[in-house]
Length: 448
Image (cartoon, rainbow, N blue to C red; front, side, top):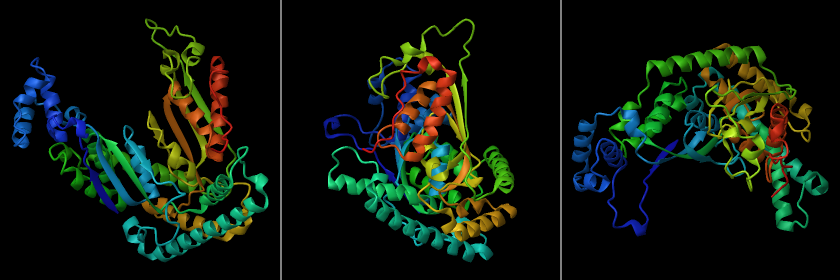
């Protein structure tokens, strides 16, 4: 695991502007909120040659809480290389206000060597051999299915949806994506990936505190490394990033819930698709919503257009019983609202093009290993899962954000399984809000 901080550099045209550290920026803006002098006057009193003294002087006068100051630090960028897919998922779940990206499964190394050690992940020593064997066999299944599906797409090109007039190069790329996107369910969750996030010092402190409070060794190691890196950019505010009892206790209770559900529902059979959508349109009696839903939606040119108050005030919660971790990794990154999953294996998804019986022994051994880790109450059970593991997943947000997600995940270039999940949720939403019908664009996930 490697952690890298990326300093924000002013563009050349801003050479005449004062260059301030994130903490100096935060302290100046905090002082600005308790003064009518204006920003230029405050900056004139700052000794840029000795910024630490200026920061301490301002913060001593302002005496604001660290959270309100930390949010003023601007975007602090951190890249996390070689972390497990589980840790990447967890960081995105925690960092609800971050902008970030994670490496696609299409571009990372699919090999047993590209997995942290059993010790790094907290796999019990007596199970480490079984775990390594399962991981190696899972990668072998991935490569075998990829090769078979690639050949199938060549022999039967009708299986690969191609845009009209696709060039040979485009057809070849889409055929490979067809194979990759269907073979990926065998990829171990422990596989190393990379991610980068940008968020304020306030949100980084919360993220690091949360990671440090988890029982997983990899999360705690990441917390230490991120804190060390951010102390270079925001030393005062990152002092508030240590684990505390409230975070530890909530992490303990969530783990106990996951272990109980995992033991109860553990299965390698495919779950039947179920979706749940709840719409809350209630408003206070002294401020009713008067805009028609159609007026909130019809002026948009595309999904990035502004929506009106009728959808921005409408609460929407939606959930699936069977979100494969392969899809969870991406849907979990829609940052608005809150997402929740127990991260268990209540079933195992494989696309119709893959013969489940061919892999029965691998799936059986993987199931047995997961059952043993769950029985022991080990947090490391998450690292015995493959991307095909199906888990319940819930997301609560507002209607404008849900509509954006539904249009994006069924639109051009969307993964076939995303489109199935979001199409089902959108149908439930439109049944609850029929006035939106005709103004929400459900795509057909055509290749791009």
